[in-house]
Image (cartoon, rainbow, N blue to C red; front, side, top):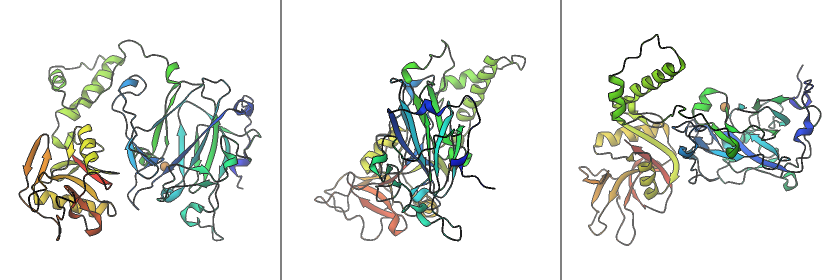
Length: 421
Ligand SMILES: [Cu+2]
């Protein structure tokens, strides 16, 4: 026997839906999806592939980079995505509309919210045909949510019926709905949950399929930051210990006796072991996610689209540089990688024309203040074709021609980019 989730009743005597009945409803839409190229996920929420902070977000709140400015409804981007909720108004109730819709809606996701149990007010499935097959595109024509962006990423979802906004969906289950902390979001459908923000904390909100989660399908719900209890003095700090020379010396001169199995020693040894992996290993050991070792190099192939100038800056912000493909072998290796993995997306690399007045330009690899003259010129035929009057001073691995080398404008067109370190 199958029972629709909307017909399930809670028998918990402490459960009382009245606590989430309110005229002050804050509604938020979260689309859990894989909106990238076919076969090339990024697991994401509203198009944001989650970048885990390098510090403990609760204990070191000022050190988390929550900047997602580069993200909008038309891009897939990577950042430490968070929304803040609060309990400043005691009547306030949060209504999350969690969906799996749009072009990335090819999975159902067991979505888990830390810190709360929520009321499941509604579950809506996609449309299926007479043979039980999901209608393509998640049944977008029939469900209640509209995706406004031309890419159909659905990162900026809205109710089709504007009168449903702000928690006024007309058909919620008020008859003892179950309280859960994890709920399946059906592929092509959505679930409405309600809860009060009565538990200050930094709560992870994520798909519980680990492969999806670690691929970026998660985000932070930062709840009442001003009311979060302070951590004790001397609470251990987390950080990236990359390039921390002092730490290496400290490690090599310390032996931790196994008898010291108290919490402190455990914590300390875990930190030392972690540091050891990152510091005393080879170059390969330092090449950590989201960077990836390809050949001898360490690259971050970022599908987030931006201008070449901005890509230069974004790589620098990561302690890296826009990729220098100094040898033809390196260029071919990267080209091969892109052809296998990222067919439809073009990528900026760190080649740049520094003199537009010379015919053909003066092309250099830009890295850490150095401008190395290129020893090969493997531009696609007809390229480079920029001129003094038509600036095309940046270098692009252009998808439409098998990621051949093209010149491109530096601050106009948007493409992916490759950082190297
Ligand atoms: Cu998932």
